Length: 626
Ligand code: GLC
Image (cartoon, rainbow, N blue to C red):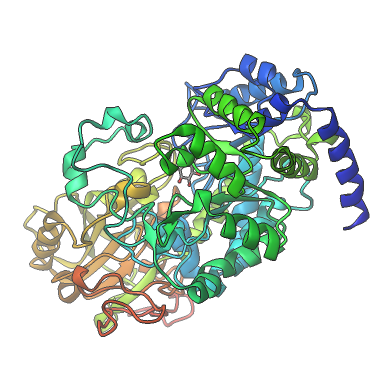
């Protein structure tokens, strides 16, 4: 143990010795912000409060965020022992809940680039914007390795290469730290979801009882999705059939594929891990003592604390007392309750008093939480409001420049028949079809302002169309969101997008391009000499006939708020450099399609293999076209 750690340990132990059992349990309790007040935080010495996806103040402004968070933090200071509170958010691609924040490409796009330095800069900018609003904990990076890309969280992962995932996750953790964990603009990372969240098998999720399906509003968590589409229709498409499901890989694969990125992220200093909703051979992670305690805390010597996922312990047993007892005994240190937190505190206190949960387990959990707070400098005034970044860093041009770079570099050029790309600056006319060409919400995807995300001008940003206007000033842009015009053009650009989703709401039975998109592509194909297809998606999609109809195919993923940057490789202002990090299927029936050992479709050939990504040179390097 380094001297600092030893000194801090002494201070932590001295504080622990002064705490009542109820205060210790308070530190292990994490309500969501609408379920507890600052007075509750003060009276019960609550250790943390969170905003779930879309858990925004009204108005949703950086100022209102800071006022809300500081209200909870100051209340914690006024509790009997004044133990600082950690506020947590899902800043998974920037401070994405906050309107006006910089929204970076989702991890699927950062993985396609594979540049740790860029990831580090993205994390650092994110940390500055999040800390400016008083928040010091983000539930990122996800080190999810998506095995079946029909999974709605595929885009939260960097890809199917464990070594790359580990390298980028470590860079993200370093970026969140900055110069020191105790800096006022350092964020506590939460490496998630432990373990093997991305290996859940299609059809094994029990998150939604489809036979008993009544109304979305009956589920306080899923009601937060505020779905525009009909929930039964979303369920019929496959929602909640994979996420939170069962993993049946062997121990060797578990260690070599899914545990490996945690080793890298913990080595970078991460002091929090979030448990996965899923199960391994039927035993849920939230009560998996072997993995949570023996492996993570024992074998990997993890000093930090494990937080549960949102209401995840409730799924362990119909009896809530059993849920609390089994999860805490297995190694969960803080419980994201998030609603009835008093019930949780009472249940845990009763479990300790009846000897079902040893006091030593409580002390271990609280010590881990206090060590993390101590490491963040919260006991040394690192969270004095005046030391934190000013609010004008939220959405700062310097951060948007980083997001622009990432959005420019992340598109993967999958096909380029006849060197259709880059488009020449002398192009007389370009037909631009598809609503997604000019829609910030569609290019950002889920976890943006709201939990599920949404189409439309949901936050300030730039779009691909704006980028085309900038780089093709002498080209007539024929903009047709529905592509129902009749005039011909030498080239056409069709932009299609998955409708935004998050978590299991994005699970699908198949990934076929919707018929409306295929029809759009066919209509434009009939009117142009060269057709370029751009796909905004969180994962590979099944292109079907479009794979032949298009001369060029670009996987642009979910580039975030700076979508104008996507125009740059298309027009030769920059070159394509990114590559595929997951296998791209020919047909949905071939899924899951992954590189890990034998698979149901071992013989299935992908349309595009991991590593696919054509390169182009920017016009400035190449000879300018005649
Ligand atoms: C969600 C997600 C997790 C997120 C948490 C808080 O259900 O599984 O990734 O950090 O709840 O929003």
